[in-house]
Amino acid sequence: MAGYLTPGYSHLHQALSELGAPNAPYAWLVRWLGFVPLGITFLIFAFQSRRIFVNQLPSWLFILTGMAIISAGIFPTDPHGRRDTLSGIIHAIAGISLLILLSVTPLLLTFPRLYRNQPQAWLLVFSFLMGMVVLIFFVMLPNGISPQLIAFHQKILGAYFEIWYPLHGLHQRLLLMVYFIWLFVFSYFKTK
Image 1: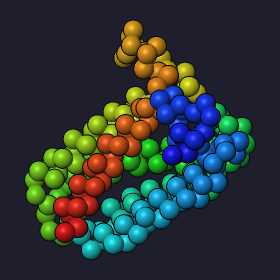
Image 2 (image 1 turned 30 degrees about the vertical axis):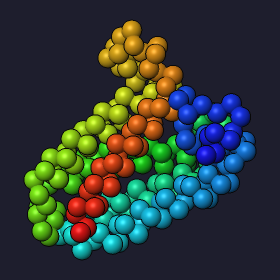
Image 3 (image 1 turned 180 degrees about the vertical axis):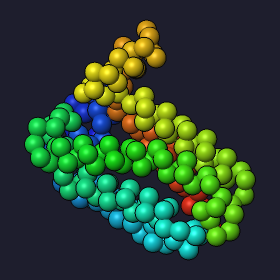
């Protein structure tokens, strides 16, 4: 909603974090009613799901995910997603940590030995496939900062680079959508 109400904001070209930047008109709402409550739900899920695992690794993955989201909310990005202030740098570190956690969690939860009661095989395959899709989205996420990553993307995408690269916002939303579909299916079938 904040994106639709923010003049000039593009869901296709701009990251979600830019809605929480200090110069954004609804920054407070996005950060304190969006990021922080979402992070808290991950912490609650981590503690509620502990009973289905034989060790603490999965719970810690969800705890760290929640903490990264909360940190991204407490420390807003700088305008235009830059890293000019300490807050912008902390936000970037939290964001990268979050993306790494979103990429590896579904993959790590494909190991049957982590569960008290082994999940059905289809759920492990589903977790692996969704984890691979999230990982690919993470690797291919447009990044205007790393020249090596930009060169890698140019090589992989060829002529499509100029079309795809400006679509950072869409790419980020697709990555999050795939992860949340996985999390919904995983939590529904594994915590029943």
